[in-house]
Image (tube, rainbow, N blue to C red; front, side):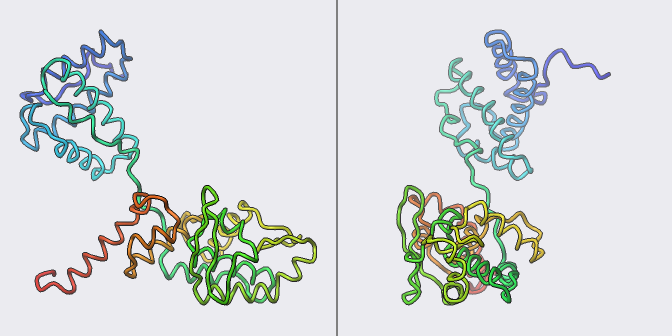
Length: 312
């Protein structure tokens, strides 16, 4: 069996951080009484951190800025490290900087203002336009339930609505002549979302040919009804989407929220303004909508490559 070394590994030899890291690990061991495995984890994380500072030719802790710390976190992410692991690395760095501040090694704790990578937004999963077409065409429209399901899928994609919003739609909340839907989002906040012509046509077809028969079993005013005439629950809608994803042979992890992400992504890909997408999604803050800015950046890069004289 491999023997565990008596002391944790330190930064490379000749590193200007070697002595202060050793003092920090001693402090965490003796004064704070942290577990041996925790000390080893801190040592490994700080070894990577110090190596990154050496690569950036930052030979003194006093010269480290927030930009250097962000470069370090970006290097972890580019190296394939998960957000949770990056967050653990940042914890070690923050503790290290607190120690250096207390010891007078630095005069400013620049690590205190760095946001945890756990808060970084991952690019949401979305479907391509071709995959959306396959999904929308998956229901068997020769059956009443297939017509209903096509109308449901069209509504999801046309409005970018949450599953709870689609489940709570009533007959009165859909205005087919003016082509808009009144959605009630989080906190019962109302918003008006335009309804594309295909979605409006399928909803109308469902209302005229399918819903009257389903509604005979109850007096529900909800727009989409199950076979017993009751309003469809969000869990049922979730399962419905999953079913048609399989029918369309889409090899992605898709949920109703994926259609909301697809709605926003396709709008931006085709030139929509981020603020307009924010309103359509019902986001209170533009910060929430900014998870889609990768699309805007990619579009701008494509425009630059195509139209700038030296863009290629």
